[in-house]
Length: 541
Image (cartoon, rainbow, N blue to C red; front, side, top):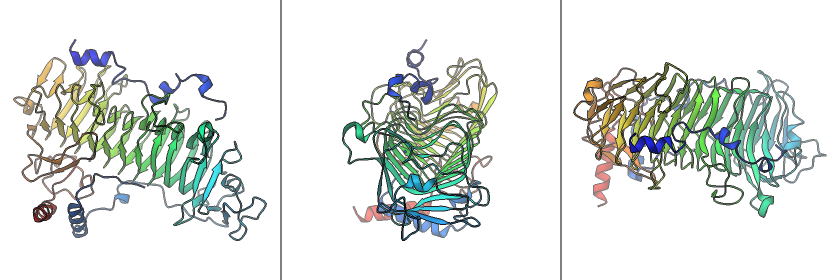
């Protein structure tokens, strides 16, 4: 057994238990009876950002990001016969809930609603402490008359929880509800245990359906940003979930199909584990909180135009079948970058880098893990993805490491694999198969690029695995580890015009159109942008 294999077998590594399975190990006394819109794509210098904007304006054929998937129809803010009510920090729950005489507490206001109604929470600070009077828990709307609860436009209110309250919003068992424009966090004016606050949004027990959670900022909570078990037709849009103790998005195993028809778009799922009960997270009982980590589900799941970075666990960890990760940045997470368990799943036009988040200690984690376990013949696709790893001393990608005799098939096309650290080949289990074409390898400290059973592949024979495979320095603008990097291609990169058009997406990570000879990796080289950037840099030096 090699050193790499021994390290992984002894470390609860690629086949690690899920978040909720590990959570069950927390002593019961710590789980009381009472039951977190930013597209943070990597920053270029100001000159290059301006150039990208000019190029985008000139390419009117590029589709809008919002048109790339199939969300639910627009939600009527006020349905037929719908009324609008108001809540204000200066209100009174004995009032009629009008703008002139608003209610005082969002929880009370939410329970007065009927299908088609809208509750506007006016700007200000609302302290939530009483279970369950202070928890927002609306009834169901219907297909023609959604219930909407939203913060005042231009003056987003803050819901500040305390006294170990379970959650700010409980949507268990409801349908046709939209929640928008709220900040949810702990009460930073409280001291000690009084500042503890569990979760932002909860759907547990009874399944929910037709839910939109939009323009939310959820942060500095002790457990999950959103704790969701069974849901169908859920959209999480332009939402920022950061600094949660147990993870941004997660939940227990479903009893009714788990997560089904879910879209996460334009969001940040980051810094999980860096906060717990008022501290920096070092005292958290949950060892590896993920940005996204869910149990087996029917899917489909679409995670699009979303960032998952600096999580103490995995960036994106989905056990759902039919998971698609598209135009995402998964950066500087302590454990696995992207982990897919469910069949018919795909990573497309995404950037994955920074495993270990700057910590030089060797770990058993990988940039990509494909682990369908006992689900034989599961299919996966990785297309136009850029992967970079600095740490090394472990496999860059695993396929069925813990189930070597159960076959899976992975199609890898137009992908850049950059393993800059030592001992970082790709591992394909003996019973599994891989279709590898037009893939660029850059492993400056490694002779072996890929192992498949007893067969090893180097730059000398990697072309035998498929057309267009090659070795070379991709010439990233600024690779990084533990900090933001810039993985656009520089002029002269061997990835430029070296991709395969078959199965390639029509746009790149930044929604720029790909030409008739696509580049390898997540970013399509923009010559116009490059020359503007270069001229401005030279001018200022």
